[in-house]
Amino acid sequence: MGRKLSNKIAVITGAGSGIGRASAIRFAADGATVVVSDINGDSATATADLITDAGGKATAVTTDVTDAEAVSSLVTGTVESYGRLDILYSNAGGQQPKPTLEVTPAAFANTVVLNLNSMYYGISAALPFMLEQKSGVFLSTTSGAGIGAVPGLAAYGAAKAGMISLTRSIAVEYGALGIRANVISPGSMDTPGLHRWLETHPDGPEAYAAQIPSGRLGTAEDIASVASFLVSDESAYINGTLVPVDGAAHSRLSIPRF
Image 1 (cartoon, rainbow, N blue to C red):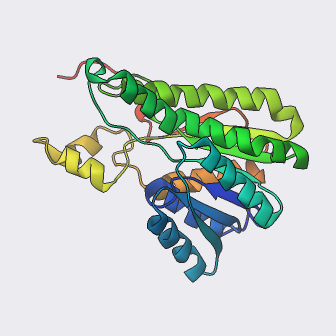
Image 2: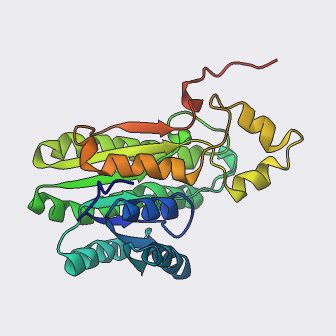
Image 3: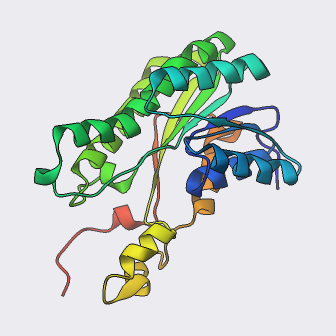
């Protein structure tokens, strides 16, 4: 495996499990020093231990990304410890599916804060340092719900669509100053949560996966490999871009099925 992230300092939120953990492990394998951030401190520590046990460099930080001051402390603490910040991967987020009419104003606001505001908090805190060093990369995890409507995910989809727009704005405003910003849109992922949901349906996970053009669910490692490329210098001219990693699910025309 290459070392395309050698000497890079990276912060990844939501890195205690899933896509965040896989990305932290991949970034470290590619040479980065990784600050593993998660609201669950034990999970963050477990990810960092996996990295250091494999010979990589990582530290764990417990962070509630819905708290602007906590995110600011995460960023400033990283710069104080390592002297710079090259990569901020805003991966933390979440959803609680409900029909739009059942979503309260408070629930809608909480979903937006967890997904969109948290991303802004990180950018706001990191951008001054990156502008001073004249380089830096922002990466975020959005969703297919931010590209097209998904029933029951109005608040989540709105927040994820906002993340795409914010990414483009950062790229356009600061691209000439050495800043890049891109966003990944994962497809249906092979996670325990999705499997539990699919197993409640008569046809089960296999029939669901067969409808994806690539014929399978995605894995956290599928996302991590793309993420590592997007934050590396190998993608230096990719800026303000949405990258679907979904087995071509977004490319399929939605039509009634017999």
